[in-house]
Length: 337
Image (cartoon, rainbow, N blue to C red; front, side):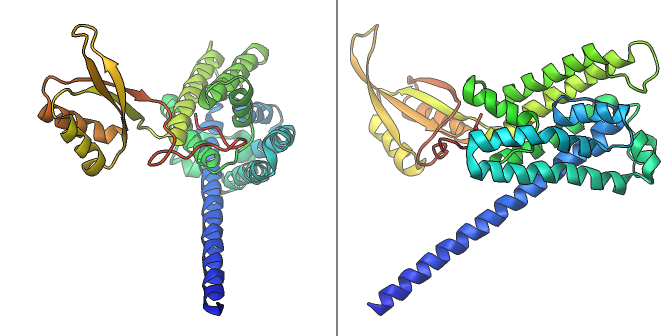
């Protein structure tokens, strides 16, 4: 009895240790994601006055009007009401992590400003010629700056989202649209950012400090590119670039061999669906099978080997939940799309 008690205590202790490790690993991922977002803005977005929507886009516009206040500091000012909304609607776990990420990201941005610029005047001017001694000056390559900035920001926000948090800003508005308007999360972020960019263009324009006719409009178009790249990379980071594939297989010959292959070689499960041929008027069994993208080609080769006359339909399975695939989402968890 005493031995069983000790073993139970050891099992509980081991389980708690694993949970602690997972918690710390999750928090480290949030820190890394926030760091990527900060790098995106400080190195690739802010120096070129790109305004990719969101809280930090508005913060950049205000920094141009009030240079003595850093972009990250303005981010703190805007994030507070959104953080309160997250706490109320998404619960304590998400809200606590979001507070951590939302306070961390602007702080890292402010610290990076002092690390990559030589002095306070350079920070106020956000002069790319002074960024890291002029080694990363993309003034003549704004498209490249917009793409790289969008990629860094999308990956960073995606990592934070995957760990049940948000960096504040339009990712929270994207979550609200996902929850109440049933809109895809990445599309909600895209819509929110686009509205902010268009509103800013109508009110003040984005050509602050840029010479030449139409400069503000061109800069806004580069900002739109950054928004688009950010939204697409964000979606891939959250969901993964590869989608699962859904196969409908009508294999009249060697159906037993096909079943053996799916269960034992492929290591998947399938479902037989009763069907009836319209032309032959004969009863048939159709196999319903979900596999990942990498497995599709092997399945197709096996079907051809078993029955060259088989009929197969392959389509995207947008979300697949259950054993061997994604776990079912929690009621108040982060969006998966």
